[in-house]
Image (cartoon, rainbow over all chains, first blue to last red; front, side, top):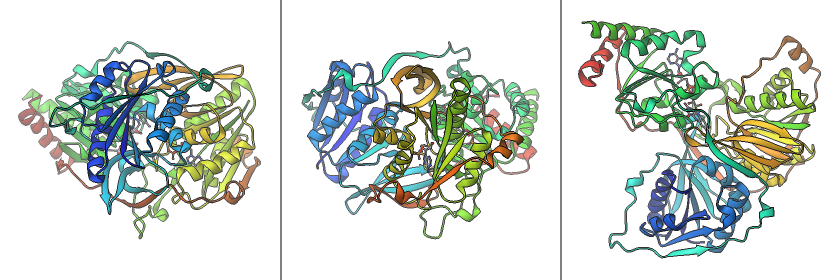
Amino acid sequence: MNGVLAILEYRGGWNRMSWEALAAGQALAAQLNQPLMAAVAGANLDEAMADLAAKPLARAFAVRHPLLGEYTADGFTAAFEQLIRALDPALALFPHTYQVRDFAPCLAMRFGQTLIADAIAIGVDSGQPVFVRQLLQGKLNADYRHAGAGPCFVSIQAGAFRADALAGEPSGARCAVEEFAPRIEASQIRSQPGERFRESAQTVDLSAASLIVAVGRGIKEQANLPVVEELARALGAELAASRPICDNGWLPMEGQVGSSGQTVSPKVYIAVGISGAIQHLVGMKGSKAIIAINKDESAPIFEVADYGIVGDLFEVAPALTAAVRKVKGG
Amino acid sequence: MKIIVAVKQVPSRDSAIRLDAAGKWLEERDLTFEINEPDAYALEEALLLKQKHGGEVIVLCAGPERAGQTIRETLAKGADRAIHILCDDLVRLDTLALARRLAAAAAAENADLILTGLQSDDLGLGLTGVVMAEILGMPHAAIVMQVEILDSSVRVKRELEDGWFQWVQMPMPALLTIQSGISPLRYATLMGIKKAKTKEVRRIAPEQLSPPEPPTIALQRVYLPPRKKKTQIITGAPAEAAAKLADVLKFEMRVL
Ligand SMILES: Cc1cc2nc3c(=O)[nH]c(=O)nc-3n(C[C@H](O)[C@H](O)[C@H](O)COP(=O)(O)OP(=O)(O)OC[C@H]3O[C@@H](n4cnc5c(N)ncnc54)[C@H](O)[C@@H]3O)c2cc1C
Ligand SMILES: Nc1ncnc2c1ncn2[C@@H]1O[C@H](COP(=O)(O)O)[C@@H](O)[C@H]1O
């Protein structure tokens, strides 16, 4: 077993998280003094491979097959299983995308391994990698070690590694691209994927908003929403929400910020009663300034906030509404 | 139609968190417990499918004695019966060992559909369902937002990133991992709570299901996340803090 293999995601374009996973792979490969490899599966991979050739890789693989044109768990699991058996890497690294969530656990299982899912950092202790994961939606961290005999499977959380940290080959040399043709039969693929689609035209385009007040489960009931609506009105801000608020139907789905909702980057994002789970953070971390109002001083939202008020939103939000009106009026 | 729903009991979202003396897990005495949130939605989906297509809903839970309370609640909401794999070692188990136990118990039922939550709120792995499917040799789909039954196959709406979706169809038996928010949750009725007391909960010892195997991953320690960024906490009574924040909005951020 040797080498770090990063399995990346490409579908006519790259999933950005691929480069973050590759950056994680690069750091790990350097620490372990092992070669870094990357692979991508699909039917049309010419552009993808041209991109990969410019990366600082020992080897790059085009896992190519007509049946890999559209993602299926069966197709991708079978293809990458064959690649991993052929290469026998020490580690297989993935971006923790929705697609990876769908097939990587099966793939690891084929090697008798458990995927270390959604790692946020990787350390090395006596030559052994230590993987940091979040527990309880970010309230705790945990260190995990690979204990199995086969390759170690790890997926990397969005935003945990910086894609721009990916150092290029100083010489500008290009790595050779290798073809890998997996054997896959149509009969192996049990699921039939349909077209990808978006639910409805987004009526609220939050990506253009310069001020956003976002409300989370701290609001407790739909009947309490006026507390934040008033604040948004006083500020002239758009109202957005965390997922549970939209799941409950208290606010329309278009107002949802996060990995399954909109990505926003306003001048100011005010999170009211939002804990700051990673799936929410990825949608608003790019805001110029973040303000959090939360009664729990250890809520993960304070990890990204520039300013915070630790307190009961039912007291703080109305007070802020009044203060904003006063400042604006005077 | 026979549907199994895998349900985990997890620490309540708002429980105060303290680490145990060994730094390996939480101090459980301080905790209250509840059903894992996506599992509540998986149960809801199973109950809706049963209303539509008839059949039986079986809850499958691995956990200590205290998980019995969560199991009763699922029966009160309308599940027909439950299988409780009695184990105190969840924290030390890796997903493979857990999934082997759950899969062995599920296999004996020959269900048409197995629903799990998308991930557990405490461990946040998102693995157990997908690995169960692999062990059972079933097709699966992860992060499901809608389920339609068509004769011997199932058509599901998968959630993708950034508000995208995709319909995927596969033959049954199949395993689906259910995303929160798939449909509004029901409450248990008084009648349901009464009936739950008479419903079957079969208790199984894990040794009956799968032999112990060495773990593939090991949880070494848990700790509070180190603070990287310095948030400026604005202190004072609400009105005072709010006034300071309004000044920040006006003079520093220049948005008022
Ligand atoms: C695949 C996947 C995709 C997801 N996509 C998204 C997404 O796009 N967007 C998203 O938001 N989530 C998403 N989630 C869900 C996410 O993991 C969290 O569950 C969710 O963001 C939590 O919402 P919340 O912060 O409002 O609620 P909670 O986590 O319940 O937090 C409520 C907060 O309110 C505080 N609070 C309570 N009462 C008060 C009070 N009186 N005053 C002040 N503060 C108070 C609490 O201290 C707590 O911090 C996704 C999850 C998965 C698994
Ligand atoms: N101990 C358990 N008993 C029953 N189901 C479980 C258990 N642990 C996990 N699951 C199921 O697997 C899903 C994913 O869990 P996890 O892989 O821990 O994120 C959960 O939502 C549950 O449906």
